[in-house]
Amino acid sequence: MTDSLSNTSNEHTSNGYTRRWWKEAVVYQIYPRSFKDSNGDGIGDLNGITEKLDYIQELGVDVIWLSPIFKSPNADNGYDIADYQDIMTEFGTMADFNHLLRAVKARGLRLVLDLVANHTSDEHTWFVESRQSKDNPYRDYYIWRPSKNGAPPNDWVSYFSGSAWEYDAPTDEYYLHLFAKKQPDLNWENPKVRREIYNMMHFWLSKGVDGFRMDVIPFISKDPVFPDFPADYDGNYGKVYASGPKLHDYIQEMNREVLSQYDIMTVGEAAGITLEQTPLLVDERRQELNMIFQFDVVSLDREGDFWTHKPYQLPDLKAIFTRYEQTLDSHCWNAIFLSNHDCPRPVSRFANDVPPFRVPAAKMLATLLLTMKGTPYIYQGDEIGMTNYPFGGIETYDDINARNAWQAQMLEAGADPQAFLANLLKTSRDHARTCMQWDDSAHAGFSTADRTWFVVNPNYPQVNVAQALADPDSVLHYFKALLAIRRATPALIYGDFYDLDPKYPQVFAYTRTLDADQYLIVLNFSSAHLSYELPANLQPTARVIGNYGADAAYASTLHLRPWEAIVFETKSS
Image 1 (tube, rainbow, N blue to C red):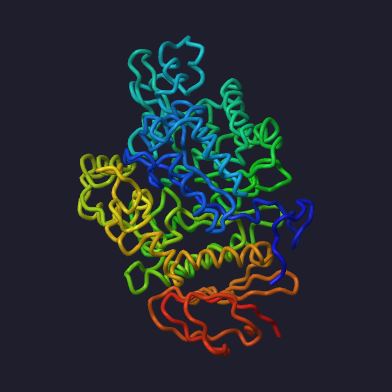
Image 2 (image 1 turned 180 degrees about the horizontal axis):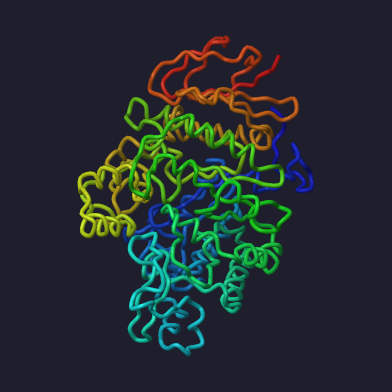
């Protein structure tokens, strides 16, 4: 392996890519409410994150991304912001944030915040003023429309079920909310709104924050006519909500006014943006964003809506990464993730979380994540192989999305409640939001409170950080080893990707190649023992890492154990 990529000039290129620190970084996402409670109130907080910075640093990641920490009434767990420049009361104070930021920097890490610029809370001062009267100076900060023939202005629906329009009696108009009714959409047509957002971004960046993850950023531009859904509408909200006419004007303006003035990273949550449209947002020559989250992988096991599950097929997963390679050229960069705060746990979703298989399966998925081209994102707890929670009735869920869907599907549409709950058990966002499992003490060491804000997975005595640190064969130690290898291996960052066997139903075998350096990654996506024949022209020369003990020798036929992952150095003949 060649020398580490760290501390190199940003002006250098590799395989045609301009090198940037954020391309060579690995991001660790924290959901603050569930990470660590420092004051015994049952809710995770900023000081809890500060307490665990040594753990994060020792893991070997480079960037911490915090889900929203801003003042909020928590209708949608912080994605409804009441004050962009204040801290959520449960999370601490601005002094606590400043202390956290200093501690992050002291460890050579970087910090990225969630930018929620499409909407605010209805408790934000702007909206409180906006709904007072039609001539209020803040009225045009939001999107208000009169009724249409006694009904909402159009037939748009909320991501969280029901109409996207909420009637407000005092002024006899509707306001738009693409999410919960307590999350009114901002009117980006108003230059004052854009200036407010840019000033807020400068506020945080001037403190030393290293960038933003931008929540539903393609939705900021709306068609001002607000037409009904087209006749051929197929249920994909993104085709309407993510296709506003001024999206790129707004993001290019944001880049000129803010982003270009700092050495930072930006990643957009880009629901509704196709892979073919992606270069419009991330091609570095367009001066917009660094990368976006593609939802192809995390949509593989969904059918029709967010809660209906369908089994995925490995060839479909493999084809996604080939499309990335073929569509995004050296002027574009990708974000690679298998989970986040909106997704079930990957070992439960894409592999097998039954105890005999959980550890190798979680390691196999880590190998996939950390050997792909793009900036990898790890979600808290995945580094120890945390699993889905055994939810029961709808009352055991916290997520507003799940509860609203239950209301709409069960009480209004008359769907089968058992079928709904069976699907939700596999697809719910709440699986990611259970409390972080630190040790085998009460509440998994997350809190000393009598009661925590949300549940702790009952498997925490067996699956926790303390146990993982003590076990040299744990998922955690494997993550650390992989992260060190990736950091030292340019081919695993900038190298070309090639799928060796696209149609094979159980094995994902691919190469990453940079000049004379080539690596072969072989992943068994099954709970079975398999024999797999390597191409005749591709011979392993050294084993770099694997999630089982090493075999004595490597022949053209690999005898793969359940969920086995192996990374080889290779040579082609």
